[in-house]
Length: 127
Image 1: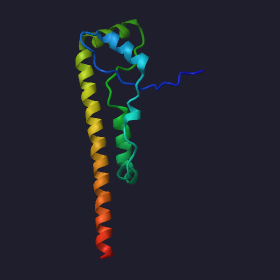
Image 2 (image 1 turned 180 degrees about the horizontal axis):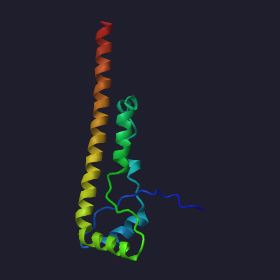
Image 3 (image 1 turned 60 degrees about the horizontal axis):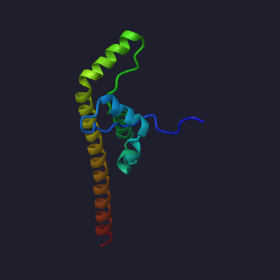
Image 4 (image 1 turned 90 degrees about the horizontal axis):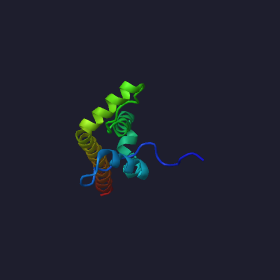
């Protein structure tokens, strides 16, 4: 039976003095999907296919991760880079994730404001 856990998952920042590899192992074991926490497409995004496409691209590319390395030397370079820059790359990924959530919140707020404006206009038209 294939693994039903999501292929995309987040790794929470290291707790205390936890080494980066331990945090990665913990993230692999937990496999918490960030996509479940994201809001669904709103009327604003549904009405604008370009915006919906850009939001989908933003959700798919916020995390920094290296491309698959082929060959021993490429894998060593990748491991060395993640070992040297792991904390900075994790902070950048966390910032990107926060920005994606902010954009999602702004789109939802815009949708709510448009709905409220429409209700007010309908109410004023009935007078």
